[in-house]
Length: 289
Image (cartoon, rainbow, N blue to C red):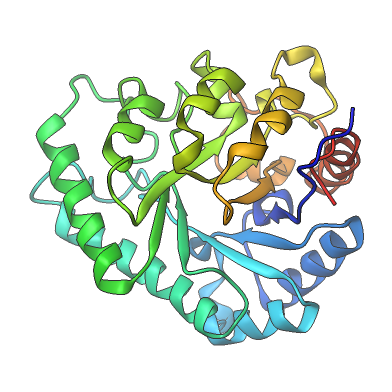
């Protein structure tokens, strides 16, 4: 099947390992470019701080390889909880640092003025009760930050094992639909874990500014037996906002082991091999240029 949605697709740093140095980033970007990817999602928290790799140097690496950088942030499970009022100030300080990282890359001409990720919650915390007031306060604080920094924040609803936000896709859509500088980061694998697919995606597509193709268990996309309708997503892409970014997010086995995700990510395919297979699959369904 061929569609008219062909575009530049971003790879993900988690396909290469759980830590980043200047040398490893440069090599990963070169390899991903050879596969046909046009950029990479970068998680600044994974950068080895001992290598003195500030955002200006990271920008230089992306520009040298002529790749686009998209910054991903999150609230790590061992840190403060953004939905607890007495902890949210420290969370906001941490998120501001990631947002400012994205801005440096953008001002250096190698990435959009965008931050993506599960910024709405504390990663991995399965709550016994949902703090609705805390969620509203946190989203208000993030919106104020987005306005102050002239930044787009795209929220990633997670799967049922990593985030206890009730009905997270619809909850987040309700929080972003009328805020100009908020949007959705839609991961097809996470959506599938909640029983959602292309039809649900079509209902929220106007606020999706980053669409991430990922399979159940982070297997290569060509393992269609898991039931995700990737072709349906490809067909629905024609209604995405004009500035929407598209990516693929496999995890390398080293990442799965380091972050203790074995029960969630069952793939036995290496991240680089998965990226290779994903590129071929996305071309076959008309997504990747």
